[in-house]
Image: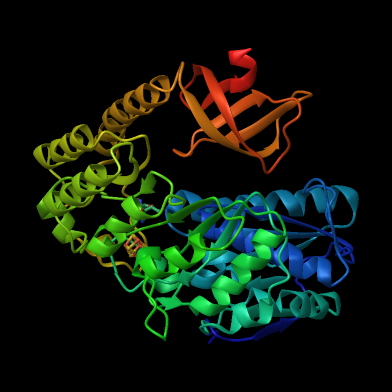
Length: 459
Ligand code: 5AD
Ligand code: SF4
């Protein structure tokens, strides 16, 4: 029997096309911000091991598929991608080495190994610090599966050799103990673990020295953060805010049950804490929330939002929603529309419920028909899209701070973010990436804004 924790699986790879010796790599990431963060760290590890980043996946000797297991569609993408890489390999007579990382690797390591013989190595989210070693083994034809779930070993092994970006991610917490009945995360990412605040402060200092102006504190349940010495999340934010150079702080993803009074108050006390919060509610129906094991009600959620807005009237809210959870009636779905109207979202992600093997909801009776899910999702998204467009349109003809993060497509164009996480395209001669400028917003679309430098508007 192949257990999930077998380190060594088989020797040699079953498909016949020779595998390239990895000199260059490409990480393709699916899913959440945590994966984006992990992808950056994997890149740094491979570069420290002498590999160079390839400009495209097709040019890379090693392709790392950093997978997402949250919904079935996300999960299936990995197999189609493996198929494409194999096909390209057969055509050229030599194929890229394939590593499967992330949550599908964690949840289905043995299954991938059996179903996709071309995969050269399989590494779970808590083991990717061992990626270079596994690539070395794969070069010798030894195929490894490493999906152990140790706790802080990965972070220790990664060290702090980080490249800073104007907006830099920092994982402060991983894993989830909440066990929402639809969700695979507690199984794929393991139990909640918080990194020591002192280590995080040190890492933030280095990021700030390297040019980071904004720190995005990441965690599956980031506001449940509490380290072994008892530092809670609001304390951590206050300490990060004191680091010279750090002008902006964001955090994601939060759970409504962990929105403590202290954390809400921090939004009124810490200027660097941006007035934007991603706070998933999933459903507006208390009966569904209970069946989801969400440990909050529609009312407790709205109370947190009201309290935040009393302190920060410009607080923008983003959310996640699931429609068609088992047993959801039309009236219960309408409760979701109602909470959306009450909250007025700046941005949101909404999904059809997807039964995930091994989760309690997948076994529930009253699974909802696909046609009903499609219809509810369309109605919900129409409302959310209207709110998002109205939120963006309200910024037209206002002046707002923009942190310039990257070059745009056109010469002289830069792209940055407002405090409310809206992307702004602007021509900003004389300004550079990493600057926070004041922009005058000229126009707004559903996903971005266009602006000009305020001084130029005033001139
Ligand atoms: N089906 C549909 N959506 C899901 N999510 C998590 N699990 C499922 C599932 N089984 C959504 C939730 C969560 C987001 C990251 O993905 O809305 O907040
Ligand atoms: Fe999944 Fe719920 Fe944990 Fe979020 S809080 S990761 S939805 S189990």
